[in-house]
Length: 300
Image 1 (spheres, helix red, strand yellow):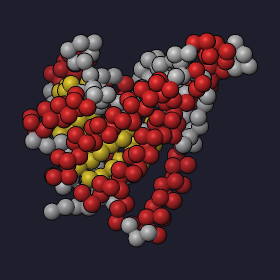
Image 2: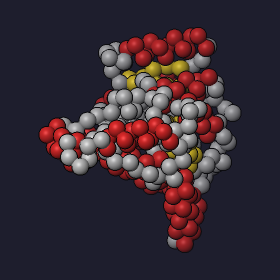
Image 3: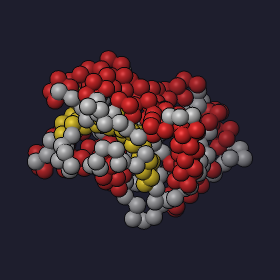
Image 4: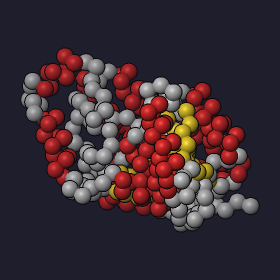
């Protein structure tokens, strides 16, 4: 394993914070992308600094608001100015919402799409020119089993956004291989403990419309959905296993990394459906004469 310079978005808590620390302990130079580093997330920045000192690792924070073009460009530029390059980018930033689809406004859908999908495009446009110039790199996308697994009700804005992000990851993958850039998609299941996803999830702005569902034939569905998800999760399910899986993938030799890695203790079916979809994709590439785009090229 060679030491890498890694940037991870949405690293103030949850999978992001766990992964940043795990990668730093594995010997990498890690930049935890965090927004409002001098404001509401100052405590998270201090915690990362304390972790770095206590463990003798190279974990740093960088101001990176994935909803802002200027912040993303400045953050990526700052890392390159300090390190000269970035080896790996991890698209982890995301936000969840919970409630009946009809009760969310179009603006809310757009805002969630912005955080979960457009954020990756901002980061890619700021970072990929540098990776392409280097002729090597790794792009890791933290997807979700919800994109092709079981999809319980009341999570539609999040599910739709993660499905779009996963689709974007697949498209980017084949457009980067000839530049020497590898893609790895990480697919966590519905971890109900160890992250702030459910605790900090957004709610519908149209409260009256939501109340029609809550007081009508869908009364009790929200509690049943959440309790049902929690009941499927094994007692020993650990959100840190996602961070461990990412470290394992990052540390693999170039060109050997799996296209997808599933970490889904509840086994909601995504691994089966993704397996079929990815095989169909590979077969199509062979049929149209672009099989070489399925694996990253080593550029001289």
